[in-house]
Amino acid sequence: MRLALGTLLILVLSRSSAAQDAAFAKSTFVFKEADSTKIHADVYRSNEKIKRPVLVWIHGGALIMGSRTGVPKNLLDLCRTENYILVSIDYRLAPEVKLPAIIDDVKDAMKWVRDKGPEIFRADPDKIVVAGGSAGGYLTLMTGIAVQPPPKALVAYWGYGDVDGDWYTKPSEFYRKSVPLVSKEEAYAAVGKEVLTGTDGKTPEQKARGKFYLHLRQNGLWTKVVTGFDPETEKTKLDPYCPVRNVSAKFPPTMLVHGTEDTDVPYELSAAMAKELARHKVTHELVTVPGAGHGLSNGDKQLVQKAHQKALDFIRAQLR
Image (cartoon, rainbow, N blue to C red; front, side, top):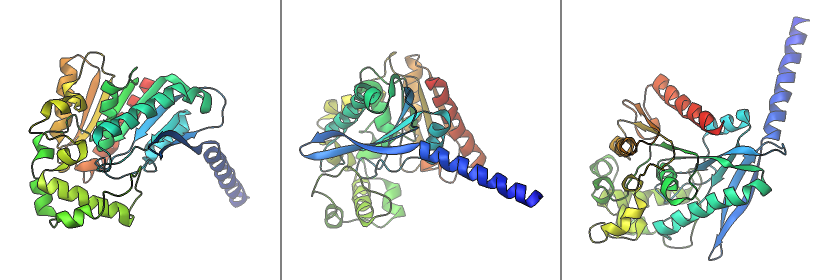
């Protein structure tokens, strides 16, 4: 009898979990067309008919690769549990388009969520938090200065507040020593064709564009190639694309999450952003994970878990 009851309990729980997953479903929309290129967003939400708060996720990938499909599981779980809507957006990728066009895509995505979201997927336009990782963390911070009205709050995971510091404009010793040098011919063989809005997982396409990224970092060319501006002669043109230089008292409450041993995006970039937020008395927190690398890799598991929990608690507090 005990075995039968246990089996029945497992069956009931499994069916309950399956029903919950079915209720929290994904729909895909085109939020913008640019020169015949369709740009998509995935919307995850329950089938309720009432308006719900929104978490917008912006993927990373150095603005060169990555896709809206790479949504962190803990954020999906949060939205499923709390009945939030999760919107994961694509944007056109560099170098086929340059940074100003990418920022336009993000702005248009946010406008679509705010203006069309209430009708299409019952979004609450007054409760929108934006989160993103790495380059997505940078784009998240950009929404604090480029989107009007700004989001309710931001979470930037291992992001950055400038695009023209030495870390991007000078050759990276880490990438020159840790991986083989990528030739210009090999790097550019992967790009320059059609405009892409996403590359998934470990596909050959993404690996090839990853080599392009390595070439740019190894030679200090990322800023010039991705933004379309020369950081030496056109620095003022880059000012509008550097959140750290545009913080004001109106900047949204922000959480920054970063590891101290990040060899891709230096920890100091989040620290500099936190300093500016403090100077303007913006509500913020810098969550530091000692010894962790990019994406909090190789960090102490308990500290990494604690950092992620702080971010989830911050999102909950802002979307209440």
